[in-house]
Image (tube, rainbow, N blue to C red; front, side, top):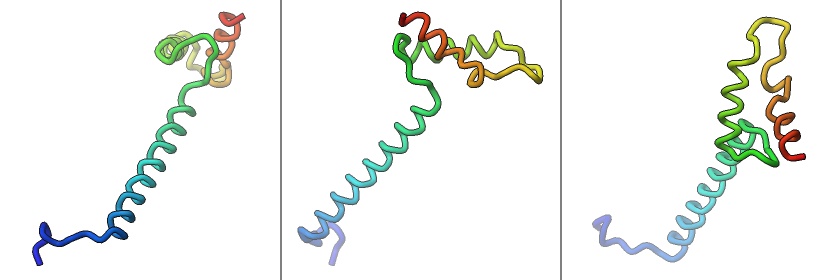
Length: 85
């Protein structure tokens, strides 16, 4: 039988649809999870402002040993709290 003329049963069609929905759900879950870890959640700043502030803060903080990095210094969180209040 030809591939294009073969009929697909309801069970196969349901399985393909369920598998597709499951793969989309898993992909969305991992995409959102990875994106949330890269940028801190803020109350005042938008995502583009957080990206700009983190890039600008990395240039201002010294890169020498003994100085904290941007995550340890919590620059974005502190600025967000100051602007929110």
